[in-house]
Length: 402
Image (cartoon, rainbow, N blue to C red):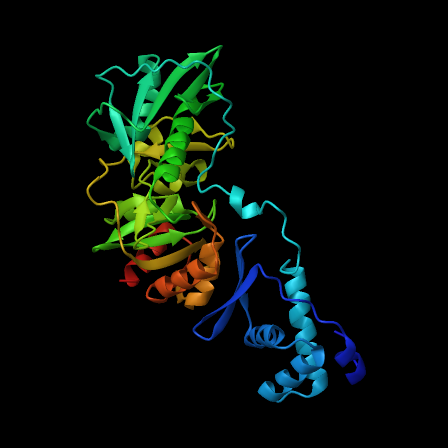
């Protein structure tokens, strides 16, 4: 930034702090929450101080004077500190006028499909039809023919429960005009062209319904491993390798709870894992084939995004224990150059900022009060980044976490 005179410094206009951005403190570090975009930004100590001065004083001269008193900086350096902070906030979009419909309201915790209004789908649910339960939702699923049942059953078999008279959701899986439909009776339907696309479609619709009918605050893109009476979250966006790592840890003796989505309960902020089938992409088949020889014999399925996947068999879901206190949060990162790998502890503020990038709030958006609640929650949790070059190293590093 170019040198400025003291006169230019005093006369330069300051922006008005936006009402939709709130400042929070965590272990001495500032966090800026953009509640309209549902984004969280970390702030350096100097930027945090500038924000506090802007909130307290109305003129640039007052802000500059206060900053000099608190830091001992000469006027020119204090001015640069102010201007750099403001420029960074502008570049981050914090001063942008919010749209009437914030983008965060449309983000989905699980991959969804555009569902056209359902045609007159018959509610064909024979009394002998199996029922399935995921979190708080009971599903009845009717199949048009045995091959469709054989295609879908491996993906949902572990969720099977006793048939109920009034399920929360009814799915009908059928053939239609050379393709296939998965209809949620009374809600909508989705269509695919090939039978190898049916199981992923059912898997997604079941997960989507379970998430939105659950009693939960938010959904996190994370796998979960049971440890003692609690769990460890393996958090990251799509492609972070969560499913591979969860599957590998399962083969090494840990209990896999889920590989993609975890809900936080609204009352206690305990984890509620979305215990769907473990979904393994094609790139991980060779990595996991030694631990799971049956993997290469299982059917290849095609997701709507075009990715080829296989599903690992799951044990029956323990319906009486679907809440787990979070003991650790790990951000795994595959790095071919990591050697034997590393585990680095993260400051809670850093971890929370990263976690919010893969968190989606369900019934209400993230606001200042809820932000303070999450700060208190994560302060008591150990947070780490794990860099690994092989599955064996990841298992060894995970064991070191205790």
